Image (cartoon, rainbow, N blue to C red; front, top):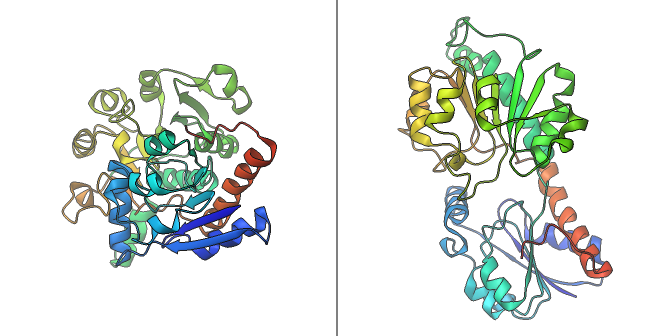
Length: 343
């Protein structure tokens, strides 16, 4: 088989090529192209635009089209694979080293009979760890305390001081119960908490091993001390958490988002935080990235903000290609069906 691997500033073509040979054998033909935006800032900006607007929003390397003409498989991470490239490619499979396929033109691939595969659960360990870290940080003012000390202030009082407590015996609401949501529930098991789940795509029996309860979004918001989002962004989930949801939440509740910013109505969140309708928020994702220097969130004392770090660990980057390629090998060698194939 002939592979084209397309690297980027996060996973290089050489790393992808090494994974291909490890999984498919040393004699596998592999050629590589690296997507090299002018700077890290440009890369993150283009990456964000591709996620929102699809592969035509990116600027893939000019040599990528020719490189993809005589291959059986194309493996990419964040590099956009647009209609033009796919139209001229001989590939039978496109593998995306991410849980979403926004950077590949799935419609164009389907029209050519090319199977597109995503990588399910690839950063679930990293994001679930980070989610719990954000819960603790927002509850216990870890980031705010650090920032105050760095400014020479021994600060003991915070916006949540009147209701700051322990995690134990709190109610955690998980919006979405896929790979990440399940790991969050599993890792919270020894925190002595009650776990509620809102997910219209799962059945109650799927929650039994986690000791969680399936509820409506309204019930989850009304009862939870933490509302943590783990859903995928789609036309059906865009703005899922908005004015109505904030009106249901406790004034002491914290909103945690390590998924996608578009799941929350930005204007409604700003209002809820400014007017103290909720206890606070911890956010790793934003509607425009990097976040604008004059964004209202940067002036608030009841938020913990991180620059889209949740899934970005070396373990995630090194393991992701192997997860994808092993599943692809199973599909090819065993003619197996796979839920990772999206078309």
